Length: 605
Image (cartoon, rainbow, N blue to C red; front, side, top):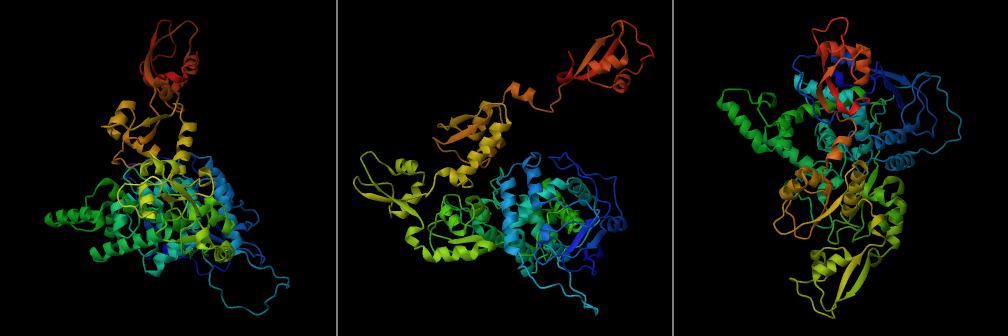
């Protein structure tokens, strides 16, 4: 590990840090990765100078949480978690997430502070007259990450391209480090416990932005973005009740297991393992065979791979460099090296709203810690573990002991009537047919009139479970409706329909339909399924803010015209007019023709 990633040995407990010559924030966030710039190449010396961290020691009272420390005199105050969250909730550049709200971050900050609050001491502070031994530095999670980097630094143009993007957009790092506050302690320490380089713990930044609810058009889900088949291959359960790809603990352990297998497969080369995690080991192996046949090197940087995979490793190394430069500063939302949650085995199925009340937290917080659960309760067949904030763990365990398993889920006894079918009953109670079969030991689809079915029901209205799978789709669609001028229509799937046919009918893309309805682009539609569609319209297209419609106009000079008045009328500059009309003389003549390239939406009438 190079010295540029090492923390200063002079740091002491409870350090406050600031960055020397910190770059100004950018306000516009690029939505696509820029092309590689082959003209720029910083030297390693310049990088070391850029990554210099200025440390300022500041005493703290015993009962002050680290996250609430005031900055040194004369320094700009640190942004609070709440302030960062407010910026995020007002910012639509970086993609919408269920996690990005002021309330959710405020709740996380309060729970962290409550869990880590130190008891107040009335004893007067002791004054040390004699020299005391040097105290080891207390590192936050980002500093601890940097201290455990294990990938070799490479000075490569592809890394520099990605580094420039992340470094110029601190809002992105604010967003992902705020999201990470609940999960990162577990993810980092899980990697360190397996002797995995700490950079691996940063992969969720580039995979999902630490959003466990992230779902791609390629059907990848969760913080680590497992596709269904790979997830099942590593034991991540997926059914109506649960999607283990979103389980914080299970998916992290699965990702580590997968990466360790790839690491062994490629003879200890972590970069090839990381590339394979993105593009598949078969893709990387084929590229290696091509290079061997051509007599070329077989390291990652020499391989020709799909564009996304070519950028994947440089993105991770660029993020690692940004974290190294900003660990311990206000650019990253500092997270204490303290566990946020603890896993509790509840032993049986439990209603999530009821569990939240038992822990004295919100139902939303319960879902954010347990995002694998699709419905209003845990899977009746398990797993039966819930992640509970450390601050509320004892209260939850006490409440759990007082509540028998028979009362952890509300049941409805339904008597079958003439004309009923499993499908109709399932639709009525908003459960799956498979669930009815499993709970009531039914084989096939035959049911008898007069028999009774046991049906689990939620203890609260559907809206109370705002982060269940169904409610997330509804919330997402409400967000789209507010941001788009066109009206939503509800499309009912008919025989012969496909995503391609529906997209063509409404002049939209398959990816849009998939995103709006949280589907994969290859999902098979069922007759009767309902899809939310926002048809494209010309009025919406023209009214979209910031859209330019540039046309070439020929303007005939009138009496009294000058370049300044013409430029003002067409919202262009005099310099532009001169550039477009190279042979233009000093004075304009009536009847003279000028070529203008004008944004017609800004013409002043």
